[in-house]
Image 1 (cartoon, rainbow, N blue to C red):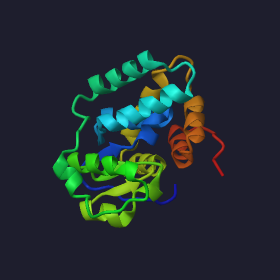
Image 2 (image 1 turned 120 degrees about the vertical axis):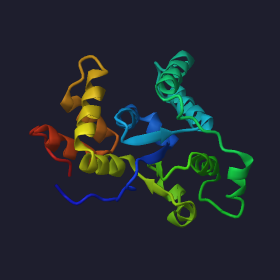
Image 3 (image 1 turned 30 degrees about the vertical axis):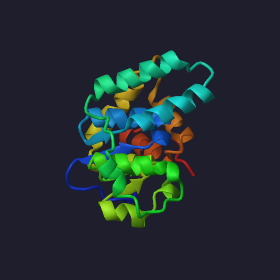
Length: 204
């Protein structure tokens, strides 16, 4: 095993999930099942959920509004405390800040409202470290987050992985790891394969 890439806070991290993470089923499942193992606390806002379902319905031919409502209901029923709504005061703390993408202002405001320590996102360039440092936050890609969680909570992450596999008919360890790689979580897939004792070909 190589050294982990990030250092998580000593206490259980509050993780604000960006829409690009929740959009991917494999990344979403890994994050949510990790939260079910109580090794992270996951948070999102209504605006983030709306962004997720908007892109899913636009891009997946079999994902309609009924499927969107079902997905959101499952998430909210499983994590009834996950949804936060930023207040005007939360937004006011960002008034003097210029962001690369103004659409992400609401994401940072939601993270402030959630007292999040991590914004889990694949768009790191949209969340400058100099901005997040003011609020004691880090922007962390899901591959780095999951890798670090495997290092610090291996048994729980193996249990989360097995729950992901069990949730879908005909899914296997190998197919689940392949899905992670398609979502560009290469380090996570390689490390989990090692934890499971699989002779899986490491990513390059």
